[in-house]
Length: 429
Image 1 (cartoon, rainbow, N blue to C red):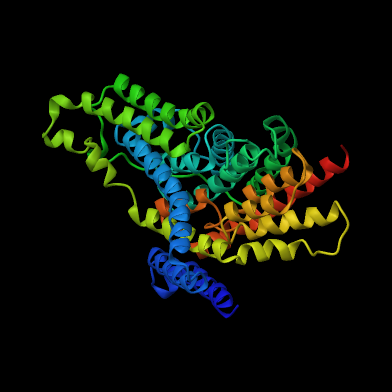
Image 2 (cartoon, rainbow, N blue to C red):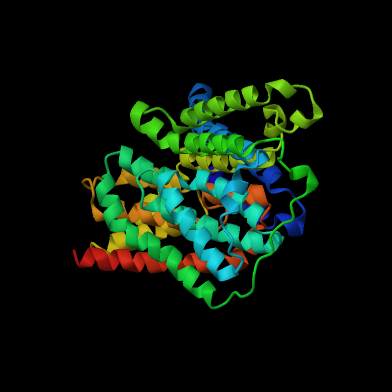
């Protein structure tokens, strides 16, 4: 019991250090890696059977590695398209510079893309687009924050848009038709409310970044740019199709798509191998542009949370929620909303996994539908509460405290607005 309590205390201290990264001048990645190590060392004291502990560690590392390889594959594809000027073909079509109008365009583009792709991939693509559209760092941070909200909202109503929704779908808890029907409006509301508030509070225009001489892609024809863009976006869109057809993990589809794009780019530039002009197009050079610090942060924070899952702390949390002295359905409304709020602090995957193990409701029960919405959108309240948030945080170096001050309250408004819409919908079925 003492070790279990110590693990919770260590996790809270580590979480605070991550949140205060800039004031205390300790890199969040270093904190996350040290935190995961300490928690698993504690687990070695709780589970004296080294063979069993090793099995748990390898299983959890495997789950995390799937996300990391997925992330690395998606980031590399985005970088390949970007370095060849592919995103310029898209951003050149977006002429709007008014902040409010552009915010609506970006948010709803993200929302619907997230439903088709997934919130993690969509966030990576949209940040790449924002870099071509907005020059000022803090303006771009603000738009990136709304991308997180929109991506998580779009992923919540789609059976393939968020990891937790996929878990519920594959686990036979929800059907595709039901989750779309009953969580679409709550998800839309969770992004509409923040957008409506911002429409009255932000003013002015964004400044477009200047095209630097070194960024010119004149040596790549328009046809080649278009082909690479189609192959890149196609590789991303193929991932959910690959998963549906083969039932294999999404990261394999992502890596396969990267392989196809890599081969095409290799043939495209084979005449210029070794030339300085071709150097920036070499995949090995493009891969070096990926922020490995973000990948390692992901590894550390997810392994730390998994230590709490194996240690039973998350299960204890889920069990304690079930003691709320209310009648159905109010009891499960409250439990689900609390799980959603906790998902902004602790990864929503183990929370949803714990709920799936605790309750035996039939398919398409309102609890599962509401859980998909709450766990998906609740992660937006803090920037490290979702995979999309962590990816954007790493790519744009967004400060935790800045996000908390500027975006979290908007996410919270949208979250509760969507909850209200779902509850009203359910009561009037």
